[in-house]
Image (cartoon, rainbow, N blue to C red; front, side, top):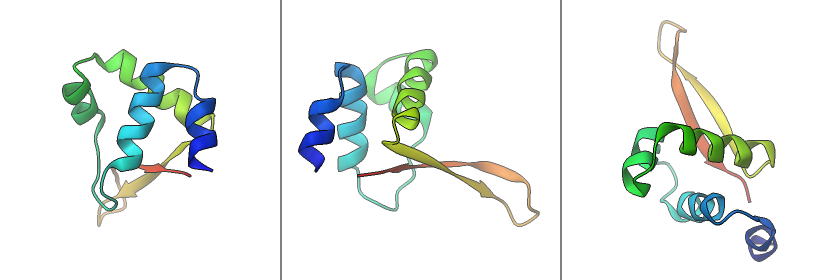
Amino acid sequence: MKEEIIRSIPDAFHLGIYVYLLNYPSGISITRKHLQEHFKVGQDKINKTLSWLNKNLLIEYIYEKNSNGRFRGNKIVVKI
């Protein structure tokens, strides 16, 4: 199944981000800033890639709230 998904991603950068996220230890939050620094790219490129992965159901966002019920951020979850 993973192999089919990996072969179906047409853009090399999207593929690289997906494989990186897929191989990252579970339970650890990865931020957009971390991805920007690791891949040495700008915010727009990361946002475009994550948006594409989300639209193609390869990742999803889980929105987190603090104890007051206010939005704290989101967590990226890789779907297989």
